[in-house]
Length: 269
Image 1: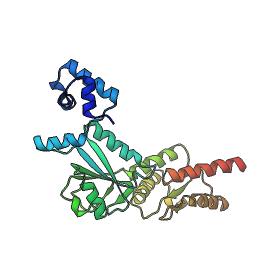
Image 2 (image 1 turned 90 degrees about the horizontal axis):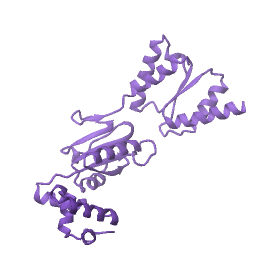
Image 3 (image 1 turned 45 degrees about the vertical axis):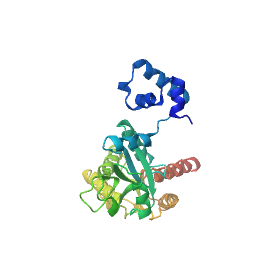
Image 4 (image 1 turned 45 degrees about the horizontal axis):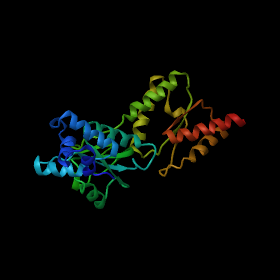
């Protein structure tokens, strides 16, 4: 890995000039700055941001420029990585860095919190896969914290959550407007906060067309969410001659299984 001294040697300047070109380019002559930048590109040199932060602490009163992300199943599943990507993209565009610490419980343990705080982030985002209730640890309550895709009992903590009720309403309304009047509902576990909200959206969409939810077949996934249950639900509906013309799915994984079943059913029926 190239060092700042390697850059200075290739550019023909002192390492202090290289440092100045990186941190205060406006104070360096254009010709010198070009030589330094060319050397950086040639050597694929990466500036040491931790050293930059330590200098800032000593000279400028120090303000950390990193955001810590407590990720509950966000970084470990393929369906919520967009949250991490958006955080990193937004942070980077503002000159900040993001650091992801995985947690595996809605109430992170002390070791996880200590590991996060050891990096001294200026702010913390607690993000989860799927809308859920979390507990903000006491050690974080005096820090700038925001919640993404989750909420807590403390009203002073800002949270940013999807509008599950409106999203489900809009989706079902589009289906009904296209003439599909007999969907089979395969919902996630009914104890999930998002399912309660989505049910409200469904009720609203049906009521607007003078339809009643009691006239439809509703099935809920188990808490462990075994997606093979989707097969059983659809097979049973077909076996019992339930006449459905569409399927409303709790998430994209349920939908993927349902699509595969329908393709197979159409092919072999």
